[in-house]
Image (tube, rainbow, N blue to C red; front, side):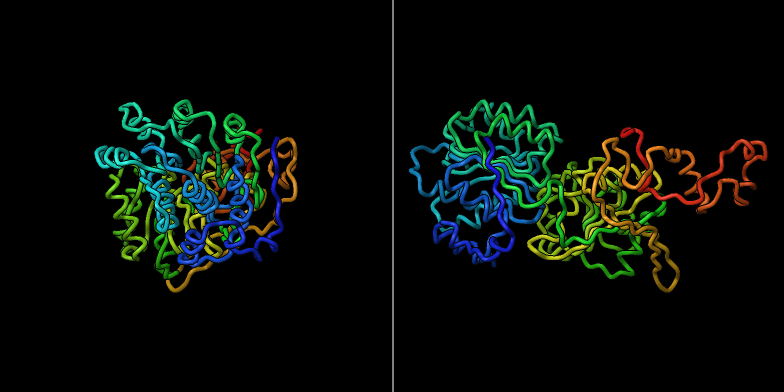
Length: 473
């Protein structure tokens, strides 16, 4: 049985943290961080967790999910008796950055309570983590891989866990942690409280929730896979070879002081960082091949405004909590649509506004289609043009948001009988830089007349958003 909790946004805005049944030590800690009113996800989840219910929570990135489970978790542990040195609460996170961020929040909220916690992840030595476990802990915040290593060494004992939290469960499944999660579940007592939180909610997450949650309270304050309302989203049609110069121009001429840029690969992140520095734009990279100390230094320099650009891969998209980050740029669109939600969720956090910009090349139209299909709305598409004195932006399309999706999985406003242009024809259109036929004067100089006669004319106008990918036919 699933209990669905729905509260009007207006009513939750009138509520205070002191009305949620939290201890004074916790409300004072929250007040110190500048918060007096709970977000909708906090107002709904905290009472349910305090009541001992299993909870599955879904909310937009940056709406306070960590406090939604962290505050009641701290109160439950503070009010129960500490009988052994074994940890009583376990929080699993997919990445080092997210684990470190969650642990920092737990430490800040529980500084007035007599509770001990530690963060455990790979990329660093075992000895400090083993020492912390031997002294006794109440709360462990960990990534699955390193935690299993410590359990195999018999340095970590999870037999006294009372509360299990899976944070960003969908990302853990995407990263292939499902086997590790199952191994960890076997080490936990069956009688425990289970909490599952994520910004996106896939079928795999639902399947995992069905296996570990018992009569959960389902807390959902926004449509599933939704982005924050305060994030202004735009896309620009840019040739692949022009992306780097376009990004440098946007940052320099737009006078952007702090920009988080996402690439798909580690090598691409390193290469872009080098190119931006050559253009006079200070940049650092953060990804899985970097040591933990290098990642922490890069993030600290970016937060301190010592560098203008931080180039990251999707593995770092979860857990980067940067105060008042104004810009997020998708240098390359993610091949997993849900990753787009988490990428742009780094801006527009805690009720602030932000801007998310995507650079779309001729080969990324399918990714744009998949993202729009997930979000159930169109992303405004522009043509970026630059001259010596100023920047010109031409809007290519301004279609209204989608209201429905057809059962045949075709793109909105696209006729089911129409045939999408092939990849070859799309590439030809972008190479010529024209919106007319492929048999233009520019092509006649480089191609033989015989080949031109057999060439099927290009459509007069092509928009990337109207392409139906082959995988969705």
